[in-house]
Length: 165
Length: 103
Image 1 (cartoon, rainbow over the protein chains, first blue to last red):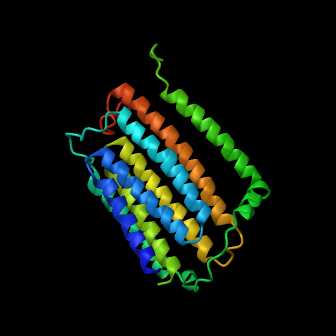
Image 2: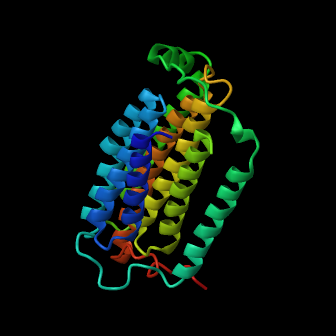
Image 3: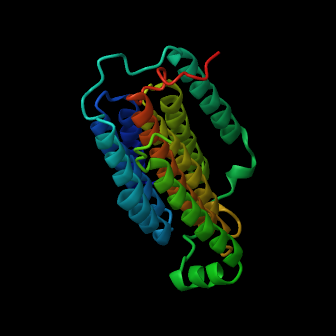
C-alpha cells in the first residue's frame, strides 16, 4: 500500500466514523459522501476505473441525493433534542468490535493472502461490456427488472394517500 | 503484510464502522447510511480480490461489484420510501418510538 493510498484510506475511515457519530443529519450525509468519494478513489487506485466512475455516478448522483432529500422531507435538519444513541448502544459497539476482531484475526492468520501482487491488471471497458452482454446477460436483465420493480415500489410506498389507505 | 491483507483489513474496518452506526443510532436515515457503508466495505473486498487474485483476467469481481452497486441503489430507494412512509404515519424517524409491534 503506497503513501497516497494510505492517506486516502485514513481519510475514508475518518469520514465514515464522523458520518456515524455527528448529531446533525445533514453533516452526517455530507461526511457519508466524503467516505464514498474515498472508496471511489480506492477503486481508481486498484485499477478498476469503470467501477470507480460507476460509484461516483450512482452513489453521488443517486443515493446521496436521495438521502439528502429524505432528511429534508422528514425535517431531520434540526438537530434532535433527545440523545442520538439508542439505549442498547454498548451492545451495538461491542458487536461491531467483535465482528471486526473476528474478521481481522482471519485476515491476519490466513496463509492464502501471502501471495505477492502481480502487475495492475488491465480493465478495458469494451471487454467489460462484451462480458456483460454475453456471459452475464441474465444477471444484467434480472437487475434491470429488479430496479424497475424497486423504483415502482418506492413510488407506491411513498405516494401520499389522502384517503388514509 | 501484503497489500491484499491491508485492503481486507481496511474494508473490515469500514464494515465494522457501518455496523456500529447501524446498531447504535436512533435515526432511521443514519441506520440506512450505516448499511450503505457496510455494502461499500464488501464491494472493496471484491475489487481487492480481483486486483490481487490469481486470475485478474476473469472480470467476475468487477462485474459482481457493478451488480452490487445496482442492488444498493434499489435498496436505498425502497428504504428511503419506507422511512418517508413511517415518518408520515408516526411523525418521527426515531426508531425507538416506532414500536407498535413491541409486545
